[in-house]
Every structure is written in structure tokens, then in C-alpha cells.
Length: 489
Image 1 (tube, rainbow, N blue to C red):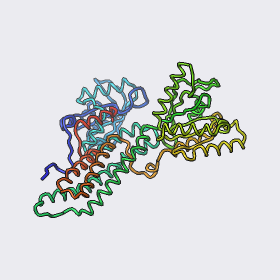
Image 2: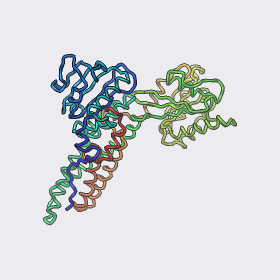
Image 3: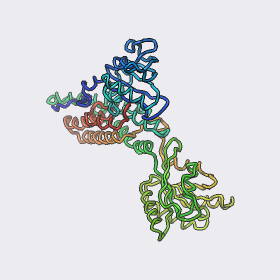
Image 4: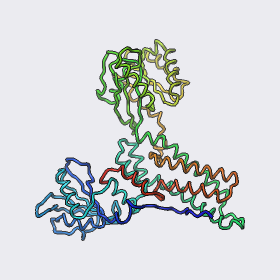
């Protein structure tokens, strides 16, 4: 019989051992520097005792004797001198963020005061907290699982509505609950298969093979959906790079300024003004788009401009979406050439969405505008992932239509339906491996492999699913995850 356990296993060693957990830690929980208020956080079994050494209540209260989740006004005093007037907020374990006794001092935001209070806490028995150590203790003490802990860092780093929404959904446990539920169902069947191995000589089946096959099929579908969601998750987390390309003087810099609603790029009637890439980021529909204004593409003898054009091609390769800009009157004058240019662009970049933007609409009369619209629609009709927009970047007409066109390239259905979306590359890798093992199990079932061989792949699938939530982990993994947190969280 194969002996490795199928039940959840948590490995937490060395850096995370109980001896270190017994130490009380201290750190600045707000950004360093001068501000109105700063928060200094202590956590550990000696938090209240150490806080009482530093804090003198205006009502002569001892913090250790007070109720949890209460605030107390007083002073930090050292050698008989007042350092600052502070507000002490108490959280008694296990009903605190870390699951331990926690004290937070809200003091005035002078860097000198902040460091003085931290130094006093260190001298009284605290240790300086490592990056992410407060959240690490919350994980170790069962206040959250590993994917929820990672969502804390994502929430702090979120800089768009969509990134915030996904981080909040994961922090609330939606994603981890889905993974835990799948893992538990697989674990139940796996246990029955393991039981069959004990009675292998009697040729009995405890696991209903048809029900097991149905579970595997459902597992495979859910895992594939989660794996596929990483495409939008990665976009939500890191933003969407969009290259604005076209010939010189078609209005690329004017378009960038219109999108950003500020004079970010230099605008000139002189062709070749933009010789390097200009980048900036805005939020459109809750998603971050990073627009890249590139040098105009043309044949030139100017060495500096030629270098800029080479960078343009580099940015096209790096971008996820291309805005191909041209003048609206060119559509009327050379429609066939436009079609050839678009086909050439799509042949070079078949997987990249292209938004064809005919600029300087204000230079055409109404009938010309209608004709240009018709020709543009004909030019993109049979090109996949290609859309068209008429606009005037100078007059800022058509900006909303351009933004809507960009959003149509991004599949935000899962986000709108509040489905679990994978944004973490570690989770993505574990899900891919789990999906591979489930596929092997299904293939083994079809080939009527013995239970002991099926159990090997089932264990691996359980292992990879457990890695996501922290039911199975190790010291090196936790060290890598929490080292990327900010100190004080």
C-alpha cells in the first residue's frame, strides 16, 4: 500500500517556528515620512506588558486590564519626559488581525516621534517585524489561508477598480473556498480508493466509479476555467499596454494628450517630433491601460529618429493592443492602401487586437465623414480582433468611442459576474499542475488502471491544490511570499 497521507498537511518550520512566534514584534504600520498621523503596531504575547511600560493613560488605566477593541488616550513617556500624546487601541487575541494580542499607537506623524517610540518598544523587549510578519502570523494562527494572505498584498498594491474588486473577492475567501471545496470532494473519493488498496485481494470497490468520473469531469472544467481566467487576471493586476502607432504627424501625441486629458506629449506640425516613446497610464472602465506614444513610422536618414522608430517596433511587440492611427482624409483618398496596410499589420501580429482610428474627423464635411465610416467598416470587416473608430483627437471628439472599443477587446465577463479570477502566477502554476494530474486520472480511468496507479496522480492533484491555500506549504515558499510584503503589514 502507498503510505504518503492524503489528508491536509501543513509544514511550517524554522522561520515560522513557535519560538519565533513567541516574540513580540513592532513596526510602523503607516507609510514612512512626515504626515498628520502615524500608526505603530505591536503584536505578540508581551504586547500589552510592553505597551504599559511606554504608555501613561490620562485616567491612570493599565492597558492590560482593559477590554479588547477599545481606545485609550494618554502619553508615551520616557525617562520622565513626554514623547508624544497618543491614542492606544487594543485588540486581544484571538480576535485580532494576527490572532495575538495587538496594540496600535496612533501618534503624530513626525519621523522623529515615530522612530523614538519604535526604539522605546525595542528597548522594552520587542523585536523589529520582518516584511509581512503581521500577516504571516495571521496565516499561522488560522485567521486566513495563504491565498487570502497574498490577497492582502494585492489589495495594498491595487491601483484600479478592477484590481481592487478581485483582491477583495479573494481576501473574502471566494477563490480559496472554491479550491478547498474541490479538494475536499477529491479527498473523499481518494480515501475510498486508498481503502480499496487494503482489500485488493478481495477485489472490492468502495468508490463509485461513475460518480468519481463525474467529479473528475467537473474538476477538470472548473480548473480549466480558473486557468483561463489568468489571462484577464494578469491584465487586471498589471494593466494593458497599448501602442499608438502610425505615420508621422497623424496626431499620435494629440491622441495621447486627449486620452490623458493633459498635455503629456509634445505636439508639433513638424513631422518626426516624437523620437522616443512617451508612456502614461489611465483607468478606463475600472481597468488600467498604459498608452505608449511612439515615433512615427517612415523612412528617414535622421539617426536619432531612426532609433525612435526601432523602439516603436519593439513597443508594438510588447503591447497587448495596437491603436493604428491615420488621417481620416487618407481613408477617402487611398482606401485600398489602407486595407493592404491593415492586412500587413495583422499578418505580423495575428494575436494582437487592433483598433483602427481615423483621426482629424473635424476636417471632413458630414458626407465625407459618412463615406469614411463606410470605407473603414469595409476595411476591417474580415479581420479578426479589429475594430474601427472615427474621431478628432484635437477636438476630443470620439474619445469615449475609442475607450469603449478598447474595453471590448478585454473579456470582463468573469469580473462582472463576480467569478473567481486568478491573478497570482503561483496560483496559476499550481492550477495548471493540478489540471494536468486530473487529466491523467481521467485517462487512467479510461484505460482501467489499477487503484494504486490512480492514487499516485490523485495525490499529486491534492498536493497542488493544497499549495494554493497553504494546507500544504514549506518554509521556503512562505519566506518568498511574505518577503514581498511591506514592513508593518
